[in-house]
Length: 432
Image (tube, rainbow, N blue to C red; front, side):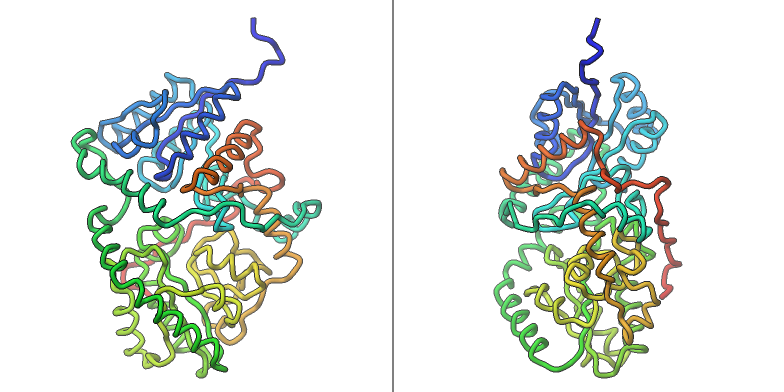
């Protein structure tokens, strides 16, 4: 007979994670605590990053075939917990539906809100799926006894390591696709097309860096008010699932049109491309043509690289769909207007006025909610670590495994039910 004081033995099922060893490391630590860890591999890249016991290969089709398999797997192995990255991926959405029917605990791991050396760990999901509180009074109360986070950077990771892991994940999927013939990727572009785009961008990287630094110096040296609009990755589910836009070009059109019609005539708008953009879409060409039609081509600047922090610190405000750049702006007390669903779109923290009003009267965050929000965010749904360094994955895996073991995800005070945010309805194509 088992001892009444023996720890509960749970069964953790891991689905797709980042192109990183961190999921395997989390599993190692959970098993050291007495739990069982399993993984379903959906493609060869998944196998590469799960070189341990407990792996099962699913080579069937998506849709109903996958739904039946995952539900049967949960029953057969008596799964208690589901751990994954990217809860909006089609395979994951089906698995989450099955997990809820089986009353499993669902934990989502993602890049940290508080980058560069933090990771996110949330129950059920992020953005419009997030259970993090949205009521300012509840946030202030929940954070009352929490200390200021230690903002000292602990871990570093290189672009080379990130690119190497990405190649290690995607190249087997391209060349060994026949091992999982029915797998369908969630990304919008083929990996080889993305790599071709990256090669082209790397070839001109030095010139872009110099041009970006010169443009930032000119902007900061001028006595002209300016706003920042950071672009996101077209393939990012924060844009695809948690915004009203069908395509980032719709967001660009809305922002530039509003700026043309309502921003002070002396103000300029700085549009910055995402640092990991693959270059397959000509954002600058689209923006330049639109700005010309709106007769604001001299008031809109396109930035590809450079010190974003320097811009944010001097900007009148930041407009974002739901990029974590908005968090960085709020952290230094700058006004932020959110256009999609975001964990930081909270009254008295982000500006709740319409975009048209934001340009002329941007409201900065109130100090009390800003301090409380970042303390609660760091304590409840962030852990220190990263995906692409040995020290960062070790540290992150240790903390994530401990929280999963303790059932302390979203604690203290970072969980309200039902989720308090609504998923934005998608606009009709062509609507601005």
